[in-house]
Length: 405
Image (cartoon, rainbow, N blue to C red; front, side, top):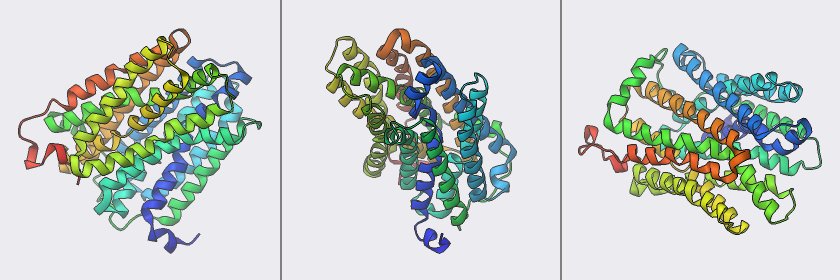
């Protein structure tokens, strides 16, 4: 693998490695129908395993932040090591799957490793392409979305084969992504180290009204997005059954419904150049929040399956389009000497909020079906309220509505 060749297009290498590495996130969800049928698991077990990954990611992020490990060692080596360990723990689920408790522990360890992939990918984008960090962030988040959807595609391509093959495929992709980053190395513009992050310093950013508005919008987004991604295969399966179509369509359609979020991120990034990040974030969050209400109401009224599937695609397009814009807004309005700490705290709180949303909707799915989506509505509503509660004079003279370059 030619290092010089990789360094000619570092952004492409990073986002592809991000795509491969984040395929670990929902690897279990991608094979869920085969796995649950074989082991007799329920939707609440799906929620339990998804929660374990989230908890592991939060723990790993806090460890990296508070210990300063991400600054003491090269980012490319941490990414590569996390990819290796993540691939091993993901494959280890094959052994742990029949054992309640052990299965959740293995997924927790996978989430722990993901903390060395996703945040470190952001750091490497800045190190290699600082002049295009804003635009690159849209691609990076978009690849996280596509990586989340990839296990569904892998299951669709391995139908008729044991579900273990799809998990091994995700692990193989992750190893390849880690190798790409290891050969690429750290960029020439790596941010200067600041040592361990003081959590209190990160919380201080919430005193700034502009940052608080962006963070509040992000928190509402996070309440919705991961629970929605968890539910997508269940929603798709419901409509496929109503159409009396082949169940083989479920993983492929689930991949497309979630993966179209990449397109949403890219379109949002382009629009933000002229309309601003707040404009894009507000409309994306408003659209996805509206569907949390419209979709279950139409499902209750017995709307045609094709209409509901079309709405799922629209929802998938909007679900993640606001995420890079909230990050751009927060970065622009955080104290410049504590941007890393501020974003670490914002991300930690956001992922923490995804846990009760996942738990609630997974436990209520059996009794409420599509109606559980209404439980996600408070996130976008409160997020929009926070985003649009803005001071009259933006800090440092910056244009709040056009903080994205």
